[in-house]
Image (cartoon, rainbow, N blue to C red):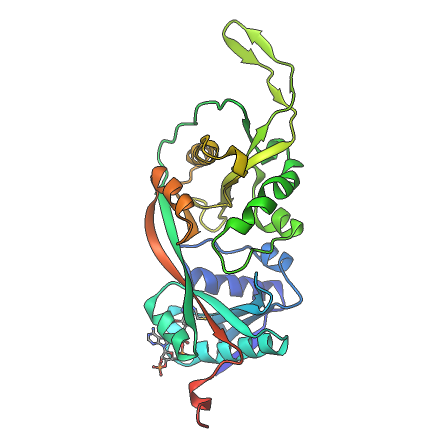
Length: 322
Ligand SMILES: CC(C)(COP(=O)(O)OP(=O)(O)OC[C@H]1O[C@@H](n2cnc3c(N)ncnc32)[C@H](O)[C@@H]1OP(=O)(O)O)[C@@H](O)C(=O)NCCC(=O)NCCS
């Protein structure tokens, strides 16, 4: 007997997470705290229980397009082909349609799930590719000239400056169907999870306390607050040996000067020093510049994810002609 119900308690959130880890073992899952924090008025999270055991989950939420809900049903591999995915999709898309969404979108990584989605009218509109890099001995890049590289942990207040000075001007360049609508609050909570693993390139406006001892320069302190680039890692507490590459961007006037690769190489050197053996990143297929930068840094390709969408309300096969 399958029972589908909304996530309520911390234990429910943990069950929801466990299904995600089982269905997407190669990807970082948000923590219970992150899931609770990222709650929106439009979001519905469901779990499906069979004889008290959670076998599947679902989610429906707003997306970066005003008319489109982001919807996903995931079923543990051992519980598939028994109608649970269909039952979840029915509840999730009904919820989204009730809120006024006219389109449902979803991201799919395997052929079987794509077949499932096509049954309900979902069609491909975008692809994302996953690039993966093994981490071994990674040297720190040479000290740059003209700008400095620091960890957000050294100047946490600059993460908000990075939003205004780097994220806001560069997010519209992402190859999505609509500009990613990222709020300052989301930037502060969802786009960083450890300030030690996040790097900023800053243009110093003043350098204080420099002492020259022979050939050695000490006491170097950057007091500038102009952020010109960001790159770093999102750590994975379930799998500390791997990390996801966070948003990488450089302000247009600073491009072509090696800023992004210096930042990325810094995060790779940091990763090597912190026991991380693999980093991975998702890039829109059309974002040739980012893919090339990653190729240049030694990334190779792994999974291809297909973004699909369908008009709401969905047509369920048994309802067609009923
Ligand atoms: C996609 C997914 C949710 C399907 O869950 P499910 O409970 O197995 O799906 P259902 O039993 O309701 O399948 C309904 C129909 O979809 C089609 N279908 C489902 N999985 C399929 C597969 N692997 N290959 C081909 N067709 C498939 C079949 O027509 C199936 O009917 P049938 O079993 O009578 O032939 C599940 O495979 C999954 O969790 N995938 C990973 C997550 C994901 O990509 N979700 C995206 C969907 S929004």
